[in-house]
Amino acid sequence: MNATRMPRRYRTVWLSDIHLGCRSSQPEKLFAFLNSMECDTLYLVGDIVDGWKLGRGWHWSALKTEIIQDFLRRAQEGTRVVLVPGNHDPMFRHFAGLAFCGLEIRNEVTHETADGRRLWVLHGDAHDGLDHHARWLSLLADMTYQGTVSLNRVIAVARTRMGKPHWSLSHYVKTRFPKSARFIRRFEETISGEAARRGYDGVVCGHIHVPAIKTLNGVVYCNDGDWVESCTALVEQSDGRLELVVAGSAAMVVQPRFVLAS
Image (cartoon, rainbow, N blue to C red; front, side, top):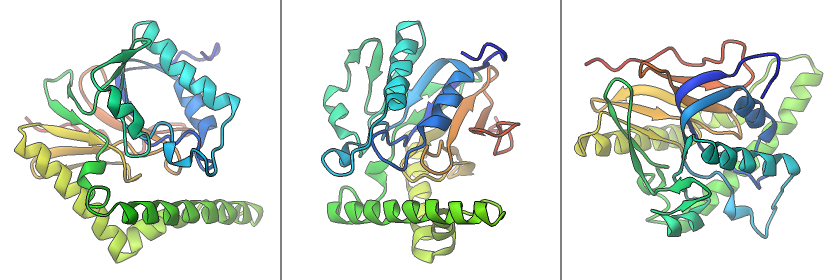
């Protein structure tokens, strides 16, 4: 841990869509975030390792190994670490219900906040309308997304050299293109509606790489974002408050504090 600064202490942290093994992941920012915090429970909400890149474009480094070791160290030292596999690391779903070096594997899990709210935790790919109805559409969407992210890096370098502020092409596509925006809204409505139907107070997911905390269908919808673009995590404070934090920001907060009305 950083010897000059005490780590932030959270009750719970949710991370997803790290995509280790993918060239576009940002392990440096994640490693810095991990070194800046401690928590009682850590949820790894899917797509931690990008199994889709095995055999085509696999990219690994010593730092990515250190991140995996950090997760295992926390589990062995008393932190509850739960892996909820996603569509990019589905091989772990075969081991649901088991534990490995203290790390629990669950396809979905219920989390109770300090103020008594029940949150449904899952990756979310089963509710996106793509993976289970047209697999080829999911693969095509992933290829398109990776192309956009790669182009985004080129644009970022050019804008930095010109002294211009950061601008995200992928975020622009997601929010300005009608089909992309409709896909995001449909995903959020579908998964929050299912959480309400099951009697939960809220849902925590990842998958679509769009961090958010909002009320939908009478429940709190939380998406913890990703570590390809947004580099965000969802955290729970000791009193149950839920916040989104972004790696590298001075305040560490990118969304206002959200408290679900009782």
